Image (tube, rainbow, N blue to C red; front, top):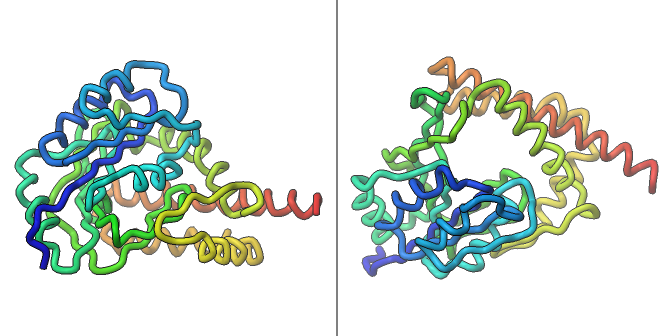
Length: 277
């Protein structure tokens, strides 16, 4: 059991978020010991100016298009014992601070905490069983390869807390148009990470070999992955509790479409690569 005060580093990846980032930063400044803000590419609004009111650890990195591709930089920059991953459109409630502090100071082998996660349809909050997000990690227990939407691995136990990570984007986060826009933006980037010759993998406390082996397996059996894996992922989320609401059904379906699109693009790149080999 650890009883010494553990330090928490909050890490935010942002992209022209001047309208919402202050709410996020205000919500965590009383909880964390350090805030790190990384802007994904050139900033075209006042996001950096606002962020510097809260921390001097504000960085601008080359545009990647997906926040997880900046995580390794954040982890290497952070000095805290724990990493709190937040998006600019998320916030925490002060009433939950004592529980979070208690857990990180006396974690009993628990090195990752999962919070409930809200959805937002542009007008109201949607809270559904099964929608959750792992966002608090013991830094020394983490192993992470910078791949789009990667969850990473954590040694030790994981515990779910009855805390809500409030989520208020400026748009309907579950509309068909929003999901389509994100899929068309993210999946081409994601697909490239199945080809080691096309990208560079940033790693934290690990190496990319495990992912490279998996990516080769996907490329070799791409038709199987195209057909089976999106269904397996759909059923996994469904079993996790998303069956209990219409919103959950929609999210499962959107996730299915995303991964079908992803593997389709991997297949297209593989065919293109074979022609040039």
